[in-house]
Image (cartoon, rainbow, N blue to C red; front, side, top):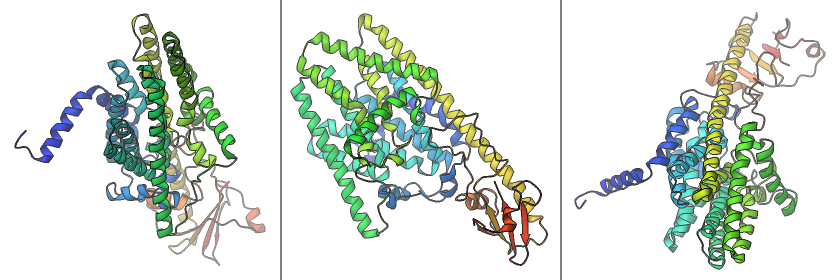
Length: 496
């Protein structure tokens, strides 16, 4: 292309890259839309989504200065279709990079690992917070691209990788664990490829230093932004409570509980438990057989160390963050379990091919289960919204019909719950971050009525009232639960 412009050359390069990665890319798109299309074509709500319709939520004050910067490319308006589409495309590219980093060759495994990542419950959790979904997808892309640059060699590439990872952390700090777990997986793959322990150990030290450099750059920028802005950097702490040993214990117990009792919603059915345990046991068993067969005890010892720190690399946020802020979205790095299975079983040959078949079936079951799980959660959110809208629409009609009501009347909703707003416990999302059982509460009620019911004519207060007459009031919807106090031009609604 001698006469081609730079843009044309870039387009041609992108077309070639897409052609070379069509299997994981198409898989990510197909399964991404199967799992998440409902969220892209409906306005689903949780408490944060109600309040952040026109914002990115907490940014600088949570150490997410990069999230604030994304407002220049992703406007502060929660738009399901366009942000959903952008997110899936960014994640699809990140998945293609992942497949290339780990040199996965099996077409079936390429499809299945791509599907497993895009259907993962933490991705669904991101789409529950649509106002940040595109920004978080960009952060994931940058974290994966940083790992690719780390292993590509050269000071310029690695320096660029450090910058990209720091920017990723500026959007969402949790993706340090994604980069860390991917780098541990790279070391495992290198040992499986036959590299000697000394060489792999040297690479591991370099990878660790690059992670520290990116983390240090992120914290340096965070401190500068905090000093300049003076908003207070409080939500994330450098060390979690209880000390190092307690944090280590939490990291490993969290990993185990993800398999055994559906911690964070990652393993969300009995069949999913079996499938996840199958791919982990098959992966570990194949690694053990490979290392025993080679009889290289230095490599075996290093492999044991890497396997031991693998759960910690996925859950390293326990070492740098307060435990009460660790939830489904924070541990997106659990997808490394699927990547490990693809790396290991991609090497199966001869009679061991049966192990790849079993793992492929297990991954397919995980994908199918998560497609249904995502749609089930989205259905719950849609039902909660419709139910809450119907409840508060009826309630506001009764308030407006109260004798003495006028445009200056102050409306007091007293209480944090409301009889009649169904929470749909039939769809269990207790351990999953995203949907809220208390969709409309004392913090979100005003915004819900303003933005989703079109009622922006009144003043609202959320007082706790200490008075004998209030104690004697019945709770809504019983007669007398809505009281007009004409001397104050004020209506009291006593909720449960």
